[in-house]
Length: 93
Image: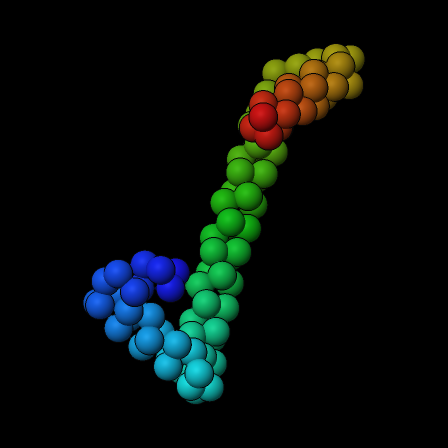
C-alpha cells in the first residue's frame, strides 16, 4: 500500500488521513459501532430469509401431503426428504 501511496499524492494524503482517524479512539469506536450494526442487520435479514424459506417449504410439504393417502404418507415424507436433501446438496455445490 505504501508503494501505491508514494506514487500518487492524493492516495498518500488519504492514507495519512486514514491513519490519523484510526488513531482517534472516538472515531474508531463510532466506526466499530457502525460495523456491528451493519453486520447485525445482515444477520437479521439472512435469518428472515431462511425462516421464510423454511416456512414456505413446510407449507408446500403439507399441501402436497394432503393429496396422499394415509397408507402412502410415510413413503411420501421420505420422498420429500430425499428431494430436500438433493436440493440442499446442489445449493452447496
